[in-house]
Length: 488
Ligand code: DUC
Ligand code: ZN
Ligand code: ZN
Ligand code: ZN
Image (cartoon, rainbow, N blue to C red; front, side, top):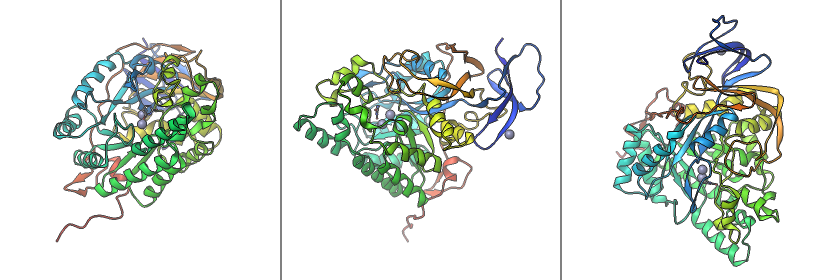
């Protein structure tokens, strides 16, 4: 059976260390990492000579089967995850969207959606309104449901957007629970003004989307969220940093010692806004996401921020719609469902852009695509490592093979791909998830129901309002330089 696997002779890479070794897997767990392992003949042997053996990717940011902008994302927990496995990602963290503001109802719905999972997954919880009920539901999520992160949208006026009062309440609540607050940082009120102005000017095409929500507004909201997090004295996770403006706010805060985590997304690293000016609506519309794809220059700066450590990890914001859905906005960019693909392409594109190009070491690649995410969300070293006792989520990457991306070849349900025609170096040849070979020789073996929910425990970085030294990742980040004096 395939429950025992030996990966022979590869270069085993962890975020801290790499060595040539064999990896032995039994019943879903990594049992041994050492050279010249001898095993019985009931073991499947994979030769990894000349290849890298690395932890499967963890995508910290996806939206599968999400109801959004009057429609539903086309990829669900099965199709999105199956595609992820084919691209070397073995876990993702999806955002639960509350139902009429109710976190409990939202979670029930997402538990249903996720039953067809073929890959391990965790949940972040979005908070879209504030009252006593929501506050109590947050306790429940952390204490009973294995959720340790809450996302606040500073944009999407009229639907998800919350104001500063809620942001502060939410940050305080997160802090009291040992949970990590996350923000979608764009100034939603200003975006609303920008959109009205575009329509007044008769700009109704996809370029209007980018023009109405410039980097300025992402920088403003990022700065505000960071300052409010400092006010509350809580760590903060900024999702999808898409501009130099936002990245510089993260850099400044981290330099001062504030505990801010910045997430890059693949589209922001690689694409530029020229695509939004394509005269063919069906091409331009597929690139509409929020925050928008920026002018050339931002992507390169964000790549630099990943290499220098200003940004700590890379996700996708995978959120797919087919061409028919994108066409809802043919007369008005405000109606184009926001979102692009990335779950299947992330591991390949980050390898090619960061490692193959010489901007990053292989160990750092493992860190930004897997290990850092596992540490931030408190599931390391179960996930994010090739170590005895870790889950057997492993990829074998051949640095000399190449990849090609196209809608013809991808494993999603969506009929387009924002990376159509992109080729590069470095190919995931084998994916092992939960101890099973799920991707090999271009063949995908994904089974609905085989993915497990990964509970993410809270952090204990707060004690009576004073930082308590412990071994958790968040508390190991530097404390704010300034503290509030207690009244005397
Ligand atoms: N941005 C997107 O493009 N899609 C989903 C949600 C978001 O913030
Ligand atoms: Zn070692
Ligand atoms: Zn967002
Ligand atoms: Zn998102």
